[in-house]
Amino acid sequence: MSLTIGQAAERTGLSVHTLRFYEKEGLFAMPVRRVGGQRVYGETELEWLYLCTRLRASGMPLDMIREYAALVREGTATVEARLSLLRDHQKRVTAQIEELHHCLDLISHKVAIYEEHLAHEGDDPLWPGSCAVSEH
Image (tube, rainbow, N blue to C red; front, top):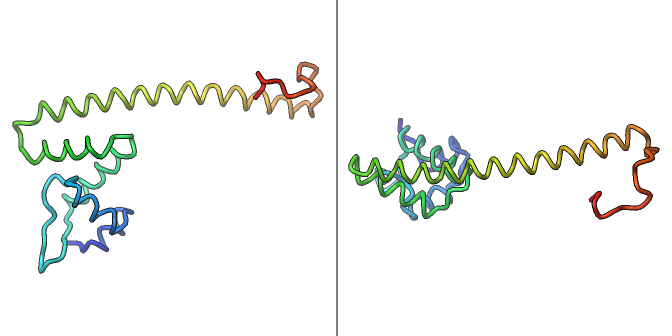
């Protein structure tokens, strides 16, 4: 399978500009092939782009993705370094998820308070007459 940059953009949901940016920034594990001067993307490049977008969506900085791509280009001698990089990122993502769970718990608590208040049509005797700072 060979896709033009436009077709690859359509398949990945990324813009042509983003694909060019990723290539310019060295974010591909292997150089993008050229046929007749045009970029050609295959399944391997699309899979790599998917990985990059998932890493990016998880908060991995471009510098770290660039480093990871460079390690992949260097071959199997860098497997331990790649594993270390991904483990470090995994720890950061796990911490982010834990923090988001705490945030969600607080938001869910606040939603329950407001739903309870509305269920009593605002006639809850425990509801303060004014907006207290603790209720915001």
